[in-house]
Length: 281
Image (cartoon, rainbow, N blue to C red):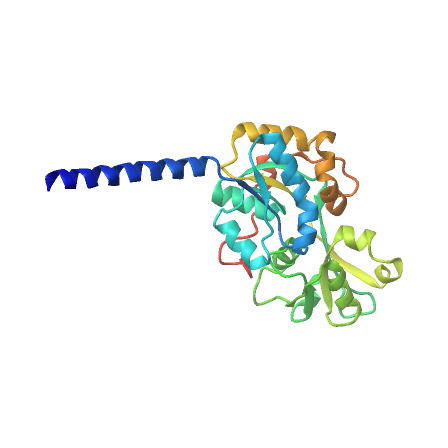
């Protein structure tokens, strides 16, 4: 009887030993997950980011897989659960991950982001931001940086516009304003000055332009080793990585040839995603 018990005990111990070894091996060889906000469809996301994932896999010797988050709710939850290892998104997301998850900023697009608060030129009762209090202002849904910038312009909850969330990008926000469906709108300045037709822009009054904030960039989780970080930094900030980054650069910074190194201090004060205080976060 005693021998049978000892035999079973040895089997259990050996099973636990091999299971632990299997788990350690799997953890050590786990894939790195690359992701970005769901601003485009799953197929469009693959075209943008899969070339980067493949390039980083070859560069680091670690398997990098692009994963589309499907929707903003999933993106929010997966960010908060620290499920992504390499993330390309806005500085407010990056700053939140840095302060909450000890993520590391790696590279960013050159230049800055700005937003303009606008109304219609013919709307004579709206000539400065305070005139929008109690009025409808169209914006992309939070946690878009434009939406958070808009909210920061009206910090007093008693003296705020009625925020109307519009899906479909800044083009749709402008369309709602021009159609008279809102008295004001928040638009990215590059869209307003470079993409709106002159005839439409001339009919719009700029009430306020936001302070500049650093451009979108890539952060990495604590699971990405220092050696891999160094290789990625070198490749993404030179023309060597242009082929893999081409679609991303064309979409978000058409005049850029590569990313530039990101510094920790650039993100100080950029965390606009204070837990439980921002719509949708």
